[in-house]
Amino acid sequence: MVDRDAVTLDDPVGESLRGHHAHLARRLGRAAGYLPEVATFSAVSADPGPAEWADLARLLGRGEFADLFSCPATPPADWEPVFTLDGFQMIWPAGSHPGPAEPDSQIAELGVGDVPEMLDLTARTRPGPFWPRTLELGTYLGIRENGVLVAMAGERLRPPGWTEISAVCTAPEVRGRGHASRLVRALVARITSRNERPFLHAAEANVDAIALYERLGFVVRRRVTFRGYRTP
Image 1: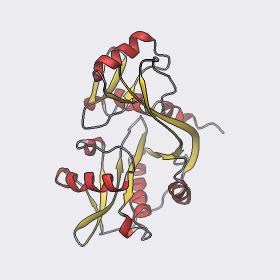
Image 2 (image 1 turned 45 degrees about the vertical axis):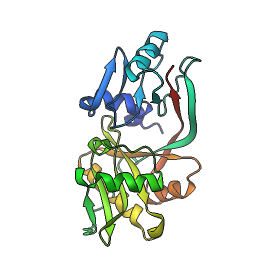
Image 3 (image 1 turned 90 degrees about the horizontal axis):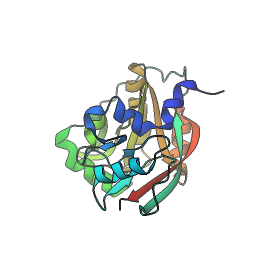
C-alpha cells in the first residue's frame, strides 16, 4: 500500500530547505543549499535545466562540492563526479507506536560545547557528513563513558511531518553494548511525541545498521542512490 504521507521524502533536502530549515538555506534562483559548515546538501527542482544548474554552480562557487543526496537529476557533463553510493530510505510505519520511553540517565542532549568531541567521534566512525554547525539541524543525543563521548545520534533533514535520524555512530572500542539502539529509540520517542514520523537513510553495504533499524521497527520505503559532484 502506498504511504501518501511519505511522498515528501522523494525530495527530503529541498523540502527541508523550503520549510523547517529555511533559516539555514542559501538560494539563487531555484537552486538551494545549506549554509557552509551546516551541511553540503544541495537541491534543484525535479527537472532542472541548464540555467538552474548554472545557478547552483554560482551559489556554491567554482570547484566546490555539491552533495545532491538522493536527487535523481544529473548535472551537466562538466560537473566532476565525486562519489556514487547505493542505499535505502527507511521509514517509521504509519500508526506504529514506539511505546513509552524508558528513562535513561546515560543519554544526554549535546550542545555547542560538545562539537569538538562530536567532530572527533564522527571522524573516527564515519557515519556520514558532519560539520562544525551540523548540530543546528536538530537535537543530538550522546552517551559518555568515563566522561568521554562514545556514541551519538541526532536529527538532520526535516521535511514536513518527518524528521530524519542521522549521525548514528559508536566508538569501535564500545560497540556491542546497545548504545546505538538506545539512542535511536530515544530519538524515535522524541520525534513521534511531536506527531512527526522518523525516517533515515542507510548505505546498502551497511547490513548491520539496516538489520538494527529493522529490529527497531523501521521498514524500507525505497532504494536510493546518493551522488556528489564538483562544480565546474
